[in-house]
Amino acid sequence: MTKRSQGLILGKGWHGAAAIALITLIGVEALAQPFRRNPGGSDGRGGGLGREKLISERGPAYRAGVPEWDVTDTFRDDIFTFVRIMYHSSYGGGWRVDHPAADLNFSYRLEELTSMTVDPEGEILDILDARLFDYPFIFMIDPRSLRLSQAEADLLRRYLLNGGFLMVDDFWGERMMKHFLGEMKKVFPGRDPVKLDLSHPIFHCVFPLDKPPQVPSEDSAHRNRGTRYESWEDEIYGETPAPANYQAILDDQGRIMILMCHNTDLSDGWEEEGVSQWFFSAYSEKYSYPMGINIVFYALTH
Image 1: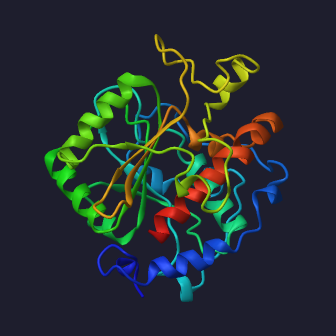
Image 2: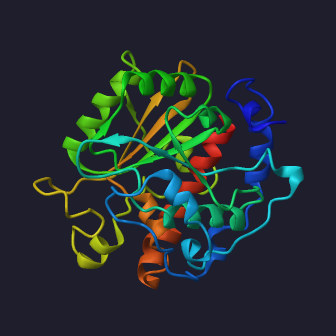
């Protein structure tokens, strides 16, 4: 079974295997405590290096203590790979936010907490890369100034309608949401997003959550600890704190194609898990990792 058969082209093979693998869980309580600080290399709010230089920098310093593991040839074509999407942006934000720490930490925790076989490196792809169709799950971050060409929109539409899943994380406030939805109209002109409430399976398909999780950036959480701003990223000037807002664009069968994790920064809970025991316990362990595993489970079984 090749990666190209994993639900994207032939629509069979991958989903059942993924379901079996993900059901076998150690449990998030096995995390107990953060065991490392975040890997180096993240440049905050985007910009800078391109994919090839990032790939060439991989090594012990790039991983900064995140354990490595081997993938046997038997599972080489059936591993789960965390795929980060590169995109064009006009200002602010950027596809590199939280890289590589979020990608590496989350991949390690998937390998640790589930019986999935996970790629220890992850991948970075341009939307127009032909290899996009080899992967059932892709991730986009901080799309506050995302700019899609029509060619990118057309290819993304084909990928999603063929069974692909896009998770979008770390964008805040109404202005950013309005901009992002405008870009998604290039992808699906006739589809409007729906709001997901706590009854949706994505909030309890593996780990039952007590609310749609809102995770702030680590620095914002510590700066505003104990106030009404603690779980809201306070650099979103001029907007009043609001709850996490999970919305989705669905296919004709009601499957989530695009999951918008709005007013939350799940990936900072992955990236910054080792900064403090408080942030780890309050956000990484309690919300970021359980929700992340739920999202991957949903993506691979629908």
